[in-house]
Image 1 (cartoon, one colour):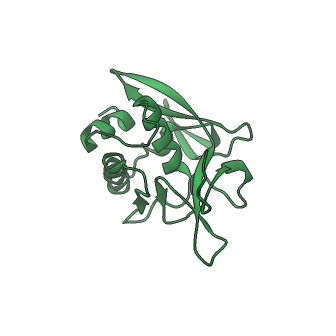
Image 2 (tube, one colour; image 1 turned 180 degrees about the vertical axis):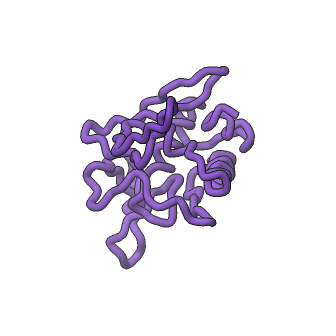
Image 3 (cartoon, rainbow, N blue to C red; image 1 turned 90 degrees about the vertical axis):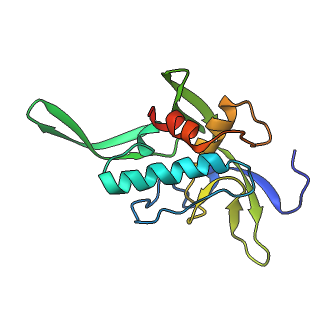
Length: 171
């Protein structure tokens, strides 16, 4: 239970204009730690996002579920997924694919996010991991899944970025 007047718990599907995957194709993607102590995860996310931008590959977006494939391109015997996106799930359940003990696991999380109200503003900011856009929720869901794996109720991770990179990508 939250007893602080500036904190509230909201479901993603109830937030107007909420998105799960915004524009992270910038040269300098902005992912921020917030009030949770998950700096190793944030470092890993930034490293992977920068690698994605340099090599034009997708890792982070691929681990989030459910997804909606918009277009599939077939080239010879190869199949390429194009223009797919992670979408808001009305049931409030999401999956985050992580690598645990040498194998892929789908970790289920709900869509409840803790927010803090800004002084003199109606805008609410996620208390945990976030991007530049307060309505972009993929970092919060990944953070929840990692904390669930670690059984961390207080969102404190005692880890290093290389371990979190492995958990997110398998390498």
